[in-house]
Amino acid sequence: MSARNPLLRNTRGFAREVLAKAQRQVKLQELQAHRLESFTPVIGTDYQCPTCWLMGKHSTMTPSCDAPPDVLFGCGTCGYEITVARH
Ligand SMILES: [Zn+2]
Image 1: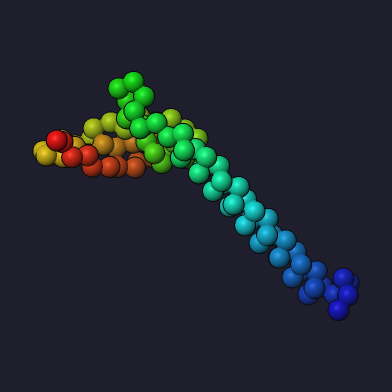
Image 2 (image 1 turned 180 degrees about the horizontal axis):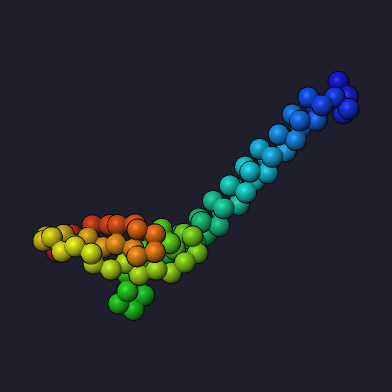
């Protein structure tokens, strides 16, 4: 088959797209792993959202439901919720 073959050109183009997408995913995962290493759960008195932190944002988690013995915290930016036990 030669490069003039439309099927071969399409297959190579598809393979390049798949490779480019995989390379972007690897870079994103490396960036998120780096961000995870620097995650700071509390800044001042504000609990930080881990999901937003991984996306490069700093969002505050606020108590959205107080149901003893647990407190439900929610992120107003991404909607992530976490339950924290009181002890
Ligand atoms: Zn968030």
